[in-house]
Image (cartoon, rainbow, N blue to C red; front, side, top):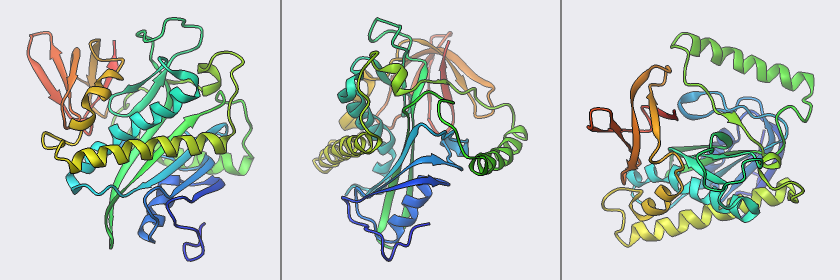
Length: 305
């Protein structure tokens, strides 16, 4: 799709495409071809987007899908902190757009919001998914790197049409993934989506897709670069989230609430109160017995009950 011998691979480049299978896959290819820290590709629609654990990442027309190449100068094991760092960068950009107090992080890194009809900021109604984030670490001849994939719902689902041939490609990919899910169990229920149009105050101006993409990239890179400096100063000895742990915890609206811990196939693993996150990003849940149990994001998901 892209000829990397002629494509600008500098860190300031933002490649804009209409339709792609996956911006993350393109960014991985670009990074292996030499794309610099900050190189970004964005698209209006993905036919084979994916989320954590290979789940489908629904990428309808009316959204923004972009992936940023990240090459922080940190030890490889520190790359585990990038999903949380990326989520805080996305929050910074969204708050700058007018959503201060109305967005938060759904552990470990997706962004949730609430309809504008809910007047109380910082309430417990952060139960609609506004942004999906998928950070993937990879290696190349130049060393380890990561790609931060960000999918933002700009317009409400179904408000724009998709050409029949593109819809057919999306349905073909989803059919294969559905068959894979059916063989492993019902899976974890998805959060209902919300769009930027629905979350911002009524009548608020929506910047162009290009401007939103640039704001997201700028904010994420600012967070990554600050985090990199903190790691270099030795502030990550307890774990990769140590330099950002206070800010990260402050933006977890589910913290302190009763939750169900779910295995990837959707079956319950435990239930209790979400009481904290450690410097490796693991969630601590206080069970009914009073015992506290720690869960890794790679193993489980949390749902507020």
